[in-house]
Image (cartoon, rainbow, N blue to C red; front, top):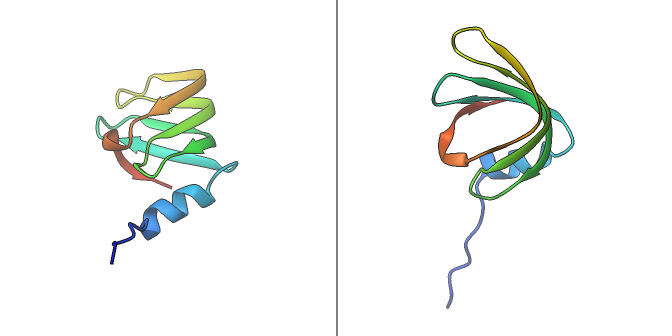
Length: 76
């Protein structure tokens, strides 16, 4: 019998966040806040209307950001 891969609860929650405002902290300590437009099972995500706050306090506004799931430290 073939084993069917299933996604875990964190991935399901990420997909449920589509269209909502999220905040993501990367492993470098930068915070990205914007609308989650796309999410993949490997936690890669596309965020629109992004405000980036770097660890040193510098703030940037970006139209969109693609974040690799392997670089995510924390998400809300």
